[in-house]
Structures are given as C-alpha cells and as structure tokens.
Image 1 (spheres, rainbow, N blue to C red):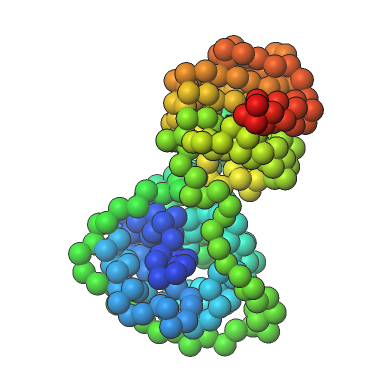
Image 2: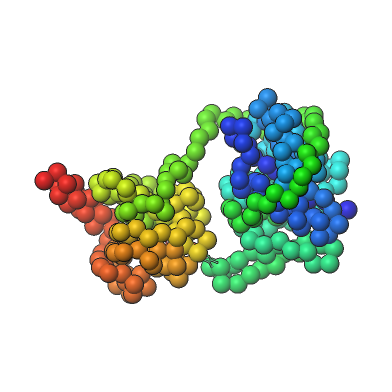
Length: 327
Ligand SMILES: Cc1cc2nc3c(=O)[nH]c(=O)nc-3n(C[C@H](O)[C@H](O)[C@H](O)COP(=O)(O)OP(=O)(O)OC[C@H]3O[C@@H](n4cnc5c(N)ncnc54)[C@H](O)[C@@H]3O)c2cc1C
C-alpha cells in the first residue's frame, strides 16, 4: 500500500495554504503509485466536521481528527505515529516551514524513518515516490529514495501548488490519542501572523530590500526605519536567503520564486544581486544598491551604487530623509 498522510495546520477557522499545497501534492503523487492521501488535523472545537470535510476538495480521502493543542510539534508526532501504526501509510508529506521541519524530524526519530527536507518536487519512480531537493546553493538536485517503512517528505515552503482536484467531502475519522508526557510540556502562549506578512510589496512605490548583509533578523529594523522615513507607499522587501533563514516573512520575498516588483525606487541593502533575485526587481524605475563589496553583481544593474557598510549608511540615510521631509 502506498498511501500518503499529510499534516494540515489551521488557524482561525481556515486551513493553512502551505498545508493545502501538501495535500494537493500528496493526492496527485499517491494516485501515481496506486494509493490515496489522508490528512491529519489536531485542535479543539474549532475543527468542525464541516471544516474538516472541505479537505475533500483538495482530494483528501479521510481526515483523522485528534483533540489536542494546535501548532505544537510533539502532539502532532504522537497523532501521526498512531495513525500510521494503525493504517500503514507509506509516506508522510509536510508543506515545510519550521513546524513541518520539527514534526517531520520528530516523526522520523519515532518511526526510524528516512526524512528529506526542503523538497521542491516529488515524483513517482515505478511504484515508489522519490523526493528531489536542491543542494550546493541550489546548483544541483539530490534525489532521495526511501528503502522501506515510512518515507518522510518535507517541502520547501509553498513549493507545492494548491489544486482543487476533488469533489466529494472527505470522511472525518476521530482519533483518540494518549499524548506522551513530553508532548504536554510545551504550551502555546499566543499565535499570530508573522510581522509584515500582510505587506503589499508588489504595489509599493518605494521598496527597501534587505539581504544577508543585514546580518540577522534584527538588522531589518534598519530597513524598516528607512521605509518609515520615506513614508507614503513604502515597504520592506527581502531576498530568499533571508526569508529562508526566518529573518523576514516569505510574503516579502522578491525574485524567481518570490514576487516581481517594479517600484519607482528599489533600494537594496546587503544584497549580492543573484540572477534569481534580479529577475524579480530588474524593472524597477531606479535601483540603488548599498554593498560593502565593490564587485557585488548588483552594481552591474544599479543606477546608483554605494560601496560601504550598511550599518553606517542606512541610519545616516534615514536621518537625512527624515530631515528633508521635516524641512
Ligand atoms: C531555483 C532558485 C530560486 C531562487 N529564487 C530566489 C528568489 O526568488 N529570490 C532571491 O532573492 N533569491 C533566490 N534564490 C537564491 C539566490 O540564488 C541567492 O542565493 C540569494 O538571492 C542571495 O541572497 P542575498 O543577496 O541576501 O545573500 P548573499 O548572496 O549572501 O549576499 C549578501 C551580500 O551582502 C553584502 N554585505 C555583507 N555585509 C554587508 C554590510 N555590512 N554592508 C553592506 N553589504 C554587506 C555582501 O557583500 C553580499 O554581497 C534562488 C536560488 C535558486 C537556485
């Protein structure tokens, strides 16, 4: 049997888009190896029958629903372990993101399973599924085969397209799980959207884009201060390197696998100017780049280049713009 099990995260009465992509992928790939795709959801009264059944729209056959804390990894590992032990799923697919990484790793340890992270494509090879993962700075693809037992596939965030391929409601199956003592140790204190997740970078007139040169997540405060000084329709954007590192929300990513922007002013701080980034911003009206490396590729397509340390330049620029606006 080559059935697939997918964990689906929910928040405020709606399923997470990234999880729905994983269900869509699980459904399509399971069909190629003669199986079906089921989903696992964990939560409380917010997980109504009606909501769970909607996963049938994406092709899920059954939804295993367990009562428990939502958004924490260890309880989900307990639930998935139990469902797989009873129903013999061959693969578990996750949509990625930090929670998916944590659950997938926990499940791999629990079931002695093979796990591949940052997967960008899943395909059938005979009656098996294999996972493709870019390596060496995304210059090569490594292919994971699973020897037997459970194969765990954790996607890159938003790597799997959401497809509404089903018409029937999914069957809802309640699962009673006795949680491991350690699964109850962590408690969700609060949940919310990542800062800046709602930013509309595609419509902004001024974009201050930050890259790895900002050094750490807090480095984005410099970019945010500058965008605030510009005021009006300004926003902060980011490279993939930094959103992958969790420094800034994915919604702000510019480039081949992010958004395409064409603001009046695009200001790059600590961005090297990789081709995959360039394709998302090259039609900006004015491109200004700050980089400490005079040979950084971004200078090849900038209208104005500033060679220097952004930690010194960004605050000065912010001050200058504030002064100009005040005057
Ligand atoms: C299939 C594929 C898809 C991709 N899609 C995207 C995409 O959509 N968007 C995207 O952005 N990337 C994408 N990438 C990744 C891309 O190849 C680069 O790895 C990424 O853009 C690099 O990000 P960066 O410029 O922030 O980091 P880096 O390349 O590490 O550059 C950091 C820069 O900061 C400078 N710097 C360091 N410290 C300072 C300082 N104190 N002051 C000033 N400058 C400083 C450095 O000189 C350097 O030039 C993709 C790659 C692949 C293979």
